[in-house]
Image 1 (tube, rainbow, N blue to C red):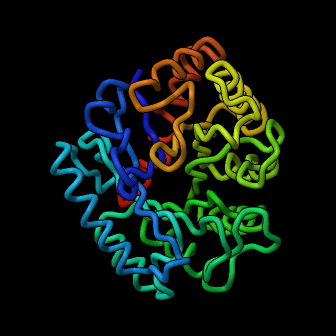
Image 2: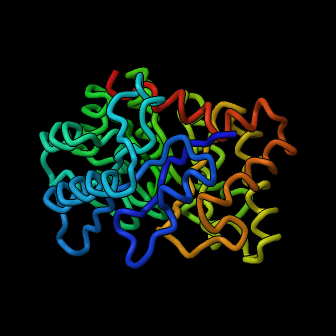
Length: 293
């Protein structure tokens, strides 16, 4: 069974990345999202994002990957460019158009700290006025707002705007807070907000956010527990995969894209083939299919 992965950090990985064309093929990855991560602590902004767009183009050439620009042509490519960190906009709304022109199709509003767009996870607050303008703009131009790393208030604000605009949003990589308490994981209210808007939550493989048991068997059990809870709360159309490969230490159970078939097999046993296919592929395809029609 093929799969779509909504988030990896191979573009900014120091040293050898596990997300390679060889591993993607071995795991049956139909589409890998590559995040251009912009860390605002170093004064990075649009220029850094543009440089990472260039790096994405070079990675595709080097690895023999084909970039996807339109949702209607997902089947024609196997790599999609995203951004992690609203600092990439550089405080200018027009830079969303520029990033869109470079091929960015999903943009994460925050990372681990508050910025000009809104409040990060663990904080009290939501979107700023500028952040609301950015989400409205993304809905207009066919770019998916990604509320991963956002506060509960930010998730709620994004849900309100996207619901009013009839546009889904994503949490590209997260888990369920009721299964393992951490501010990076979604509350049940957050899961429902994404589901009600027709969006997706990409289940990540970041061990420290999934369980206190870092062993391979402990992580296997944790991934299934998070998956079951997200489906229980949000329904079978909300869950997807968002590994965070190359952005966190390797998970003892799922170490690289080549290992993803093990998880898909577990999902088939837990949910049946039809729902497992939605989690692995169909739900993400439905949402990404809306970009840049």
